[in-house]
Length: 224
Image (cartoon, rainbow, N blue to C red; front, side, top):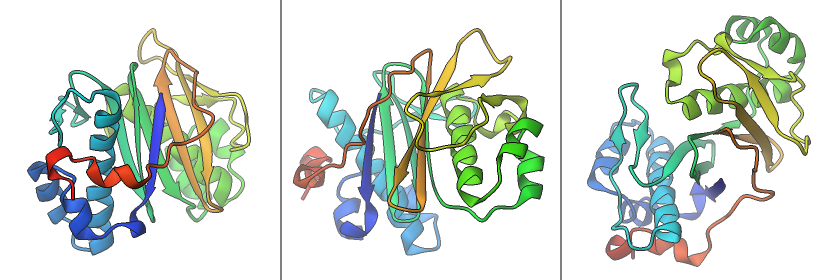
């Protein structure tokens, strides 16, 4: 797995619009607020950047298809997108994967009890642990391909110790299939957390890739 991350405030709407497909442009236009549109464009641009890095023979920008649960996919690469606050993220790999990034959420014990298992809810004691647990849960939903069709309390993170400084990976307890799912959490800045989840693989990168100047050419002939 490789994880890419950009600060969306470093790019203009015009720059990002040149790096994505018409389908992504239409999708981003449905958002009312500019920052939401910018996040959507940046996530799509990151996907094209990742494709160009690992599959230079493929034409970009790409237009993913959707599975029956609404998860976007490409037939030559596993990927997952997420965005929150000033960041957009893209994870790519050979196994089914999911990524979720969240700006630190306010801690609401009642939400933890509603969406998490009893063990997970008990382990959430503040905004940090609550946010980390949320990203771990969301990344699993994306990795399985079911998304929100799968209840968040139908599986459990083991151990339910939500510490972003863990050097080993988390593992999930579930009855979904015969596969094992693992996840790792990264701290972005002081108040943003990113979790990546992978099926049957716990080989997570030590660092997250931040594209440099070549990012603006992620769209191939569409780049500026």
